[in-house]
Amino acid sequence: MKNIEDLVPNKIVKELEKDPIFKQKCVEEFLFLIKDYGFEKITIEDFEKGSIITFAPKRAMYPKVCIEYEMGTLPEVKIHQHLNITKALSQQNNLIDYHAHNELREIVQGKITSVDDYIMRLGKVWETKRDQISEEIRRALEVLSEETQNFLSMNPKFASKV
Image (cartoon, rainbow, N blue to C red; front, top):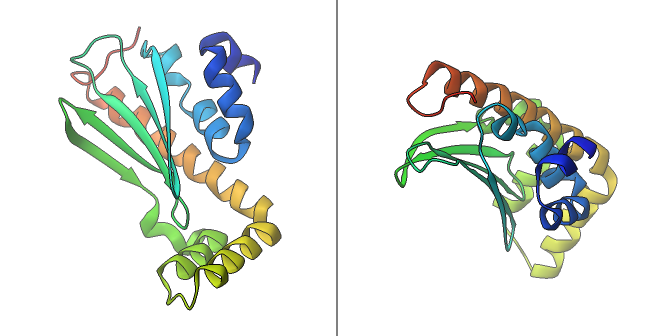
């Protein structure tokens, strides 16, 4: 957390501490956007089933990088340039390698007999496989971070190192 505390506002740090499984790991993996590319703003938006973390650059001509996590999926990265998605990076096709997320996805996409049953089934997977889910998110974020770095370094028109 020390690296994060030095580079992001206190308000964001407090939000990250509430969710070490996705939000904190996400910012840790994508901190290079601030350190290496001069991105200066981080926003966190929560919605019913997940969160979106957005890194915005100093210059409007450079893209925004959004990392989204929704229950039953793996994190995804969307690089936006002038309100258009320029590049989408995902590990969804590799779900077979992410067993706990595959199990969550099957529940989310399956037939629901009742809301209580749905919540109970998801809760049970989270309770019994929390460490595995956390590790899968970390691994996916690590891969997506590398892919994002590669994309930005190969496409200097989108962002240049500081």
